[in-house]
Image (cartoon, rainbow, N blue to C red):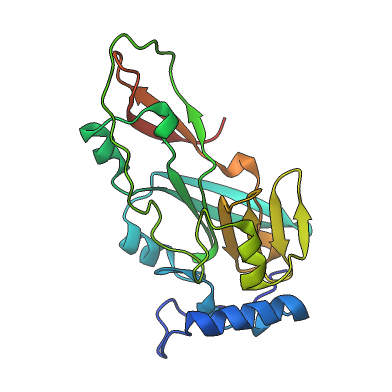
Length: 242
């Protein structure tokens, strides 16, 4: 059972709801536990909106780094999902070819989009990556360049990765639940999940409870290519989690 009513088209005829209004409505909905009170277009990260089609998403972002077909089970019902993964910064492969990165500086951001019945049902962004480097022993020093631009340029009404977790409560209200062992905090029935111990390392919004989840099995694996002399990262292949 999906909690939200059918979402409006990704390009509404009316003006977009201001972020200040969205924040106030989401915070009030968390207090009242009434997710349906939030305008549909408030559930957005930059140009990405819940309910948009896969064609619209691919037109914005291009081809994904990885695509998977799977099914999620909620209350004994199965929901088919098409999952797309994008890596940020979007030009990371070009950066690595021009300026290889030290392994300790390699922190890509992963965007996960889950589509159900061709509508975007969940958006998740996080910096918790699975990284598998091949064995390598450096024999020569290397010169690396640390990319300092915003890796993921969007957020949820000002909430971005790296934000202090304490400010999330100020912005959206008290969490409905929190699992300190997994560093996951949730708002219910508003489908908004936050990951992180002291700072936000993951943000997820969804159209309903069936499409929420921060399972580690959903994270892809970065299979790294290293320079044989410096052991700096020169490239990667995105693969399904083992």
